[in-house]
Length: 159
Image: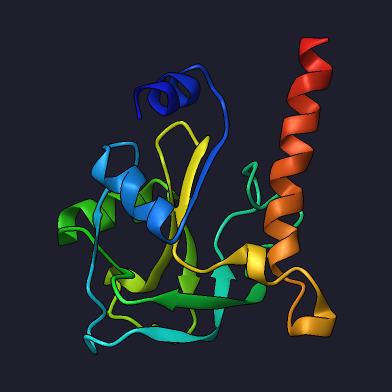
């Protein structure tokens, strides 16, 4: 994790999906923690998330308030933070994705969170499993392509 911390500290983009989100929280790179689902059951289904911000490297291809259909597949996917921290994160626009209908008991319906610098994101849904409309939804490709755009842009600036 030290290499990931250094990479993020140097401005590199870091995306943690599902268990990766848990690891980023446990490592202190993202606020909060992931707890067992409120149902205490594994959940595997498509959900709708709402994009709260589009001025990030992870959501630049989205529109404000856009709803994305992406699958979840987790037993410990309920994001948790104390009320004061969740309110502070909301006030600073760091709650990037929210469930339309929260499936797991996450505080403030949070599905995705940003770090303070905006270059580390964790999300519980799986955008990598929603990249082809023939297989259900292509909405996850918007998040992944946004990140790819940001990486390309950074490389152009560096060259």
